[in-house]
Length: 322
Image 1: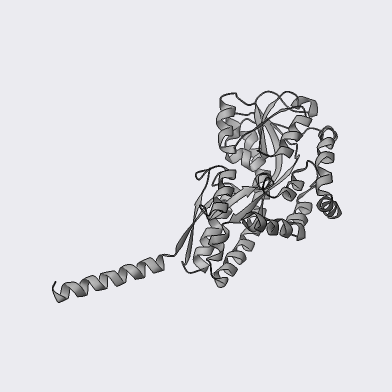
Image 2: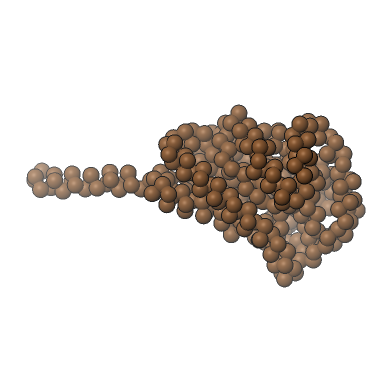
């Protein structure tokens, strides 16, 4: 081989190594909801901050709309190390860390201020720490919002109007028991399957924060929205422990600092979008009712009693924060 050719090849090889080294490590981050919701926008914002502040050492590629599977699939992928980062609803994680399920109890969390005291305080830190015991690194807790009911059958003006409705619920026993207590036929189902099921008439409705309802086009298959605010929902940002351990302490600090910034952004955006979503849904033909919650609170009392005793200590702390 000519000397000039060898030199050219050597230069090319060195350039290839340098390019590979500067490209940064790529991580995949998954969620099941829409990209333009508060969570999706905040994921993309956080990914950009991480890439900028690590000077490209880490590139987070975000995947929305269940492109990488349902939430339970994502949790198991995190545990197995097949997925780097996921955004998962508290109700799904309650199947792995039962204590988290306390916040799924209906009408336990009163308002946004109460929610912030719970999830941004010691209780939230305890939940994140407990994930270590099941092969999950808990990074942060973001907001999804207060959950409301939609259906295709009738206006819901009081709790009796819920009777007989087939409602998609998360694969979480507390949620299933809640809707059965309210008189509905609770149908556990992955969120990715819910739209088609409503479209085909296999189920009558679903329940979710208003922004999720809007951004996932539920209005196309459900025209009735009842502002029940029966549960407050969060999502946990979780990570593969092995992947987390592979990151230097300096970059781990950047990950956490940027997540803290994204947390404030996400909460503010979530609340703004939630308020706007009601008017948007009305403009798209959604009939919105505000039923008296007293009947819902009364009928859901057996659910609080059934599960409350299991989480008595945490429930007491939640009550004290009101």
